[in-house]
Amino acid sequence: MVRTPLTPEERERGERLGRLLREARGDRSMTEIAARAGISAETLRKIETGRAPTPAFFTVAALARALGLSMDELVVRCAPAAPVAA
Image 1 (cartoon, one colour):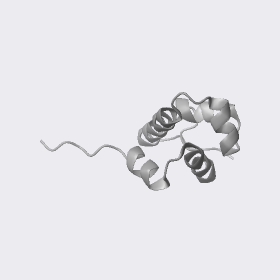
Image 2: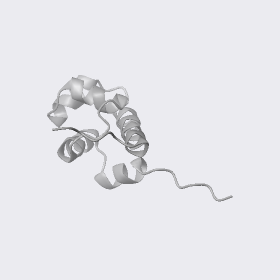
Image 3: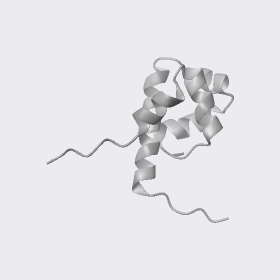
Image 4: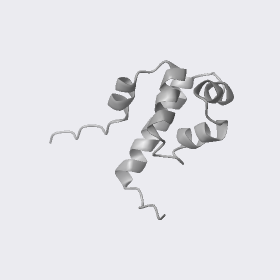
C-alpha cells in the first residue's frame, strides 16, 4: 500500500501536536508517559518530534489521558492559527 504524501498543513499540525505533548509532559520522562499510555517510548519520541505527524486516534487519546489533557483541548490547541486580518 502506497501512502499519499502529507500536505504541509498536516505536517504542521503534527508538529503542533508534538510540541503540545512535550510541553504537557514537562519534566516527566518519556518512558513514564509512554508506559502510562500503553505505547513505546520510541512512538512517543516520533510523535513529539513530528516524525509521526498523523498518529492513530486511540494513540492520541491514550496520551491525552496519560498527560491529563482533554481531547477538546488538543483539538483547539492543534488547530492552525487563524489568519491575521489585513
